[in-house]
Length: 255
Length: 344
Image 1 (cartoon, rainbow over the protein chains, first blue to last red):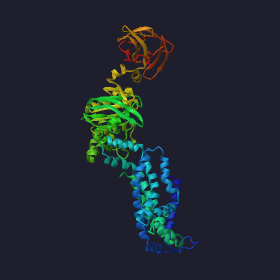
Image 2 (cartoon, chains in turn red, green):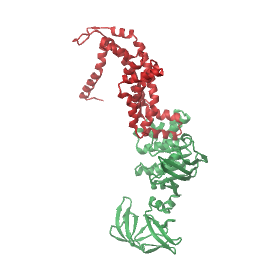
Image 3 (cartoon, one colour):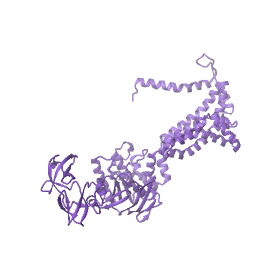
């Protein structure tokens, strides 16, 4: 297949625009000395990575991953029935439900976090991992429901009924009909849920009680030591890219 | 394996509206029945209730003598060919056909083999490995039929199976459905709003109106001897004439016709294709309109006493508007609707 010249030029332009921030991040992380107005760093080195990895970065990576995975899994479980009801248009006022669901997003996450903290103190959840997951869930759930809803619809329901009359028990209907049909939406919802939890700063700061999470670790360096911040940024991006790859795969091939 | 279907006094209310209102229907084992009725009469609801997809508020569905209430759809042995083919887009044609075999954990090789046989029977042998997305509407409907047969059901339900097809494909699929049913002797119930489809597919036809079966019988009996004015109208017996019977004769347009039965007011009915034009018919009528329909000509006539008649005649003998023609109503085609005094 031949691609027209102008098409190829556009492709290159788009690739450059998308690759540039990534390249800059890598360069910044590996530049021991980089004074303006030089285009390239004066000295390359691994000081940024050394400092980043010597601290609590690996702890934070583990905690962030555990919290994001747990939150996403819980959110998917909770969102499934909601998305099903919304997607099949069984509600008379679906807008109302979505609005209520989105309320936590209308307030800055730090404020939501502060409100939660007050109650978590009373409930003994403050500074616990469970509290952190719950706080993330408040912010993650609306995104996951919204991403999962288009996976369901009257067409899926019709296929499930067909499979039942074909003699398939509910467990097999779920595996042969429901899951493959919902897979793309499920992949998107999982990806979105993971990312929202992964990059949560406000509510983590409010509820986390000093538990190391990547965004909390990164922000102080952004002003004081850009090289370390960039190195942590790389650490921050990699799992997200990995989850994106997995989600895309899940969406493409029926499970 | 096939079983007798018996629905007894079925009631279903959907969204506050009664849809089935004491419906009773029987289909003998190994026979073909058609259920016909206007849109909204409750046809699809009955089909869903028999398949186990809609719960009855009252009444019972029996299959081979066994009461089905509370039996989930997947254990009923009732296969459905829905109005839309409902194929699974992520499976190829053969795997769609073999879907019912997954319930018994049949191996992939066996599934393919069985699917190939069935696809051959419905004339799609060459398409087994294709994705379903590229198939035509008629091909998809055949895949759905093969899938329903693959379940080896006791009862096969079909919802308007011919509705979406063009006339030529329609005849093919009709012949195929009848052949497959006769070969397997599976009990079959077709649900349709199309009276021609009902007559073509059913050994017997049941007429469903307002949630009840109002008449049931062989197609010819139903189409020529309807039990009510509403049934006559729905079945296309559109000439409804108010008259009075005296001494075995009824006067229509000033002319007496033979009409047995007790004396008194009566509604007479005759099908448009049974009215005779020309010859020495006793009635004289003026042609108001002659509409060419492609396969016949529909003639609207006006006779004495504000009598209007619709007649279908072959295209080669059709009169023109304004002509005066002679009309006969053959006694064996003239039907006195029982118990109805006035067609309005």
